[in-house]
Amino acid sequence: MSKQPRRREPSVAVIDIGSNSVRLVVYEALARSLVTVFNEKALCGLGREVQTTGLLTKDAVSKALVALKRFRALIRVMKVGKVFAIATAACRDAKNGPDFIAEAERICGVTIEILSGPREAKLSALGVISGVHKPNGVVGDLGGGSLELIDVRGNAVRKGVTLPLGSLALQDASQKSLKRAERIAQQLLSDSGPLKTARGRTFYAVGGTWRALARIHIIQSGHSLKVMHGYSISAAEALRFAQRLRVLAAANQLADIEVVADARRPLLAYAAVVLEYVIRIAKPKTIVFSTYGVREGLLYEQLPPEERAKDGLLCAAQNLNLLLSRSARHAEELIEWTDRLFRVAKVRETDEDRRLRRAACLMSDVGWRVHPDHRGEQTLSLIANANFGDVTHRDRAFMGLSVYYRYAGFSEQNEPPMSARELVTEALDERARLLGAAFRVAHLISAARPGVLPATHFRTEGRKLMLVFEHSLVDLVADRVGSRFKQLAKMVGRSGTIVLR
Image (cartoon, rainbow, N blue to C red; front, side, top):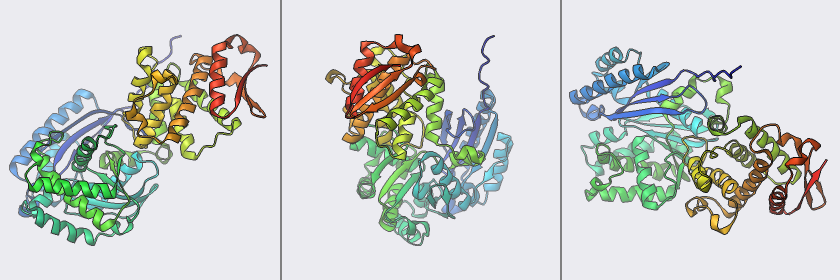
């Protein structure tokens, strides 16, 4: 009997009508680890003059409605299962916002939730919770019309606030004067409750214009990983960078920054002003940029509690395992096998070390279809640049390196790219080598087939580490297995021996 294909969950989409952009994002399914299958935005500038006129401009409304018609057509073509629609500051503040929303609902065929400021702040916090492992700090979501600030500790969020400091709103209220914008930002941020809790903690920067700042900083600093989510810099460096951008803006030199969309470039200086005064007033330790925000928070909110409680990184690794590995069950057995190895060999692990090891096990075979000469580098790139959250840049590099060593080995000719090694400490690189060596033994024994690793065990006698094969597996033992196991044992300070039971 042929195996039945796995039932596909219905896709889900979010139409996000923001003050600067109108966006459609379609996700593969409503899940703990979201997978984006389509993402398109139109920079309409709905909030461009709301602060001074109280109205959405006609041309912005026209652009937005045209974009929404296309989005509705795309949703039909893609046969999206469920559609959510939200609108933020410009629509809730403008006098003609209700008329625009009524027309937008007619076009989209769904009810549009106009988010209040506190509601928007909460969804931003939930987005960060869904995409950052155990967050602890203050989330700042900078849109075109407003800035939402909210304290987050683990899964707990406090009441958030909203301020009219979005990039378009600040440009409008200051009449395009950066000096005036500084005074407005300083005044409004000085009284912000959430910022008073941020001292020495992390500030999570959410929103398209702050992501644009991160993109510029990554390029200018030569950072080796071009992934926006989880990009982290010290608050002191972020302050210097924001000040440099303001100087460039005053000299009219931001127009040459090609990595940022034309429509967003004029807003960079205002985003930099807000970031500068957030840092001056809140005095956080670190700035972390998050691509997870309101949309992801909205979907995270829909999940049952047991799904929300899952580890997003492990869910993403499980998805890659199911899609790309030769045997999904073998990867699960590899987790148990390395659990036993590390326990018997007395390899010390923190909870975070164990979490990353298990995620790496799940992804240890995802490169098998690549040509053998390139499996190491290609899999390293896949894992380091994968579109998942709940992981730092350092952790991406560690997991990628562990699988790189599995494929490439440890000869001097096959050293990994420095761009990956510079993201980890020497100790973490050694741990990646150890895990890669374990993968090399396990995959050689089992040929990535399930049912083999559970029939092997570990024992120690003094400084000797033994790999014990049950009688049914004796024909799998060969010199190559022995030499690889000796290499592994040496990494944990032991001599290695194969034992047949």
